[in-house]
Length: 319
Image (cartoon, rainbow, N blue to C red; front, side):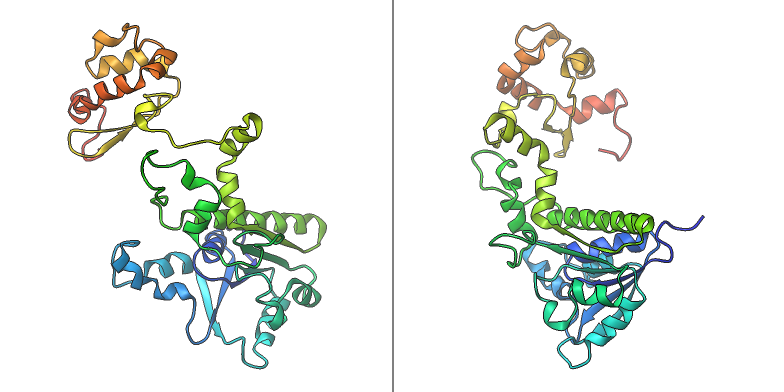
């Protein structure tokens, strides 16, 4: 059985992570992806190993960001500023299925690489672009990077302790990766539509749109209640069985007992805390929420790793 996108050719005129990671996923699914880089400097992500000194990425002699986003691709370098260089892209577009870019709005127009120009050459082409803040509005042409969009999309307002500065999400490229997934999804849906109708089209996603999608539940909560979500200390959690606890070896165990009443008795027995199963302070979801600070303090004192190891709930080396 062949791969889902076998026979699909993609022109990849993207930089950094959002765009290149989306096309890497298309390559994973069997598409022939031709990465077009600026000449002579190439994708600016090629210099990202210089950021290792900032602690953003672990130091390495190999630029693993480029390795991550370039897997499975072919490559060509083109200086679009040179006369006639755009004709190379035009020739590729004539025999390609998809064109992908995450350059700023309008950046490709002056080179004759906008949707109108490429669709005139190949009416069936899927023209996919990704931006920071969308195609309309006062910020449409602004550049954007991952951390800035985490803030703009509201993510930073709900993570971390209430009395600490908003931290970036610990996963490098968090907003970029979500934006990449949405872009790849848009491309595959456009290809499906073309399969059914024979018509190409232009599709667009944005980093901000991706963050709003990830925060959809919080956004809906605001729309229905009129109340902004806020950061909550683990000691004031609505469910003290759905937070993290530091274990005896310095690592952290994350519990996700959303149905806390269902699992409360078994949870206590495993930890050797039978005496609090029927304690009126903790024997219901509402009482545990009301007395969260007290229960969290109690559980913080339990040697969770030793206890769970003792009953065989932790595999060797799996802490």
